[in-house]
Amino acid sequence: MALPKRIVKETERLMSEPVPGISAVPHEDNLRYFDVEIHGPSGSPYEGEPPDNLRLRAANYMHTPFRGVFKLELFLTDDYPMVPPKIRFLTKIYHPNVDKLGRICLDVLKNNWSPALQIRTILLSIQALLGAPNPDDPLAADVAKDWKEDENRAIATAKEWTSKYAVPESK
Amino acid sequence: MAYEGNVDENLICPICRVALVAPVITNCDHVFCQKCLVQAHALNPVCPVDRQPLLKLSSETRPAPKVVANQLDNLTVRCPNRPRGCDLVVARSLVENHVSRYCDKTLVPCPHPSCDKTIARKDVAKGCLHYEVDCEFCGQPVQKAGLETHQDMECLNRKTNCELCDWEFVRSKQEEHTKECPEVEVTCRFAPFGCNHKMSRRRLEQHCAGCEYRVVGPVGEQLAELRAEMTALKEKDRLKDRRIKFLENRGYSAPAATENISNMNLPAQETAPYESRDQYFLSLFETMESKVERLSSALTEVEGRHSMMLFNETMPIKDQLTEIRSTLGVLGMHVRWLMNFRLQERGRVLGGGGGGTNSPSLPGTSQESSSDSNLPRRLSDTMREHPPRL
Image 1 (cartoon, rainbow over the protein chains, first blue to last red):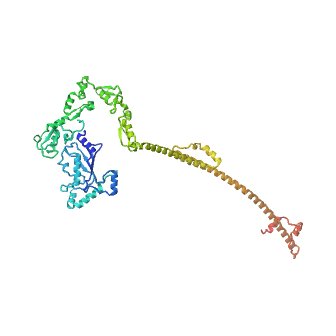
Image 2: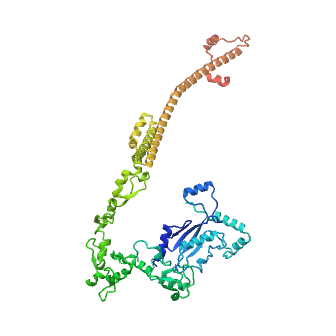
């Protein structure tokens, strides 16, 4: 099946004007399948460790911000854009709205999807979700419980997981 | 449909992301293609942009204002038959008319009643062209209907014009032309020294004359030359080293006699340098072998010399030994004789009736008495009777 014009245009634009802190690259053999990387928003527990001097220098040297980097996979079904894209976290993350399998609880990915939304807007929503966890609409019940009982400890755990799992691959 | 140039963001449907087709506007003032909105509405009856409920499309949407439609009609598009050779660019409102009525390249059903293929409109009058002919330029079999396209676009032996400089050349020579086309983009000659500029080949000279890296250029060139020279010298040095080592190894062959042999055996060794390491090691091994040979021959020589010397030394000793032995025999004879003499004398004294004088017999007297007639029978007899106390 030929790739719809819309997907071609979206991909082109993602490449030519990437959203800061977000990258989405389609697979060569399947242009509907994207490898996504989202940087944890600054000020959130998913930002990653504040880099010490040495790391900062290394990060500057490699031109990569030293941050929590979360990998996701994104798949555009044949009915896109009439149905939302399928998105899943590949990196382990301690977040009340993301379950163990990486599935995301986000209204725009479910009922509130609109064909006027795009890949870039969805990824921005996910980045925003990292900055504002919503334990009242949980997907991972245990995490949401921890979050409600002792937010500071939950944030500490989230930070710990971020520095453990969301490390950028050294190139 | 390919639009010429960029389309204004405001004329793009938020759903299909291309210029609106048959635009409709909702009561919440959002514009979509009619088709897209119908599709989206079937899945979720809200406005795709702001999620305002759209209960019934017919009552809550209306065609977009004329000004929008006009702007859309004015967008220029390329004729969809461009791949077949129509280069027309025309307003979107006119393109449909052009394709369906006028474009020569539009495919229409083949006029032949039994042929179910399609053919470009301009060839309809020629009858069915769906048979194979050979291209007159490259000899490949091509369908008559596609011959022209083949010759224009694919045939390698057909002349074509360079897209950049209008130079005419045979298509198979494309690569050669690219190498010299004055319009092809090339990098600055000083690129190895850091200049990132790119320009057409025509402008290269001009750029190079004013390139900031021009100052570095000659120095860099010299540097490159020096570097090349250095590598060459290094290589030479390595070969010399090998040769020296080889000669050093040969220097050990001191004995003149063996040297001749080694020269005879290993004439090839004279021809250094060696191309490969293996060869070098092989030659080394050969040298070693010849050295061992020389050593073993020297060893035999030394052995022979030593045995000769030993023999020479032992000969006089042997002679002396025989001499000594004979002297010893003579001495023993003398002693026995003397002993015999004494015995006889003693016997005579005893026989002579108690010779009390028993004076020590002097040699002189004994010799006198030896002349006596009754001297014993033989020497050995007395020996048997009185073994000498030696």
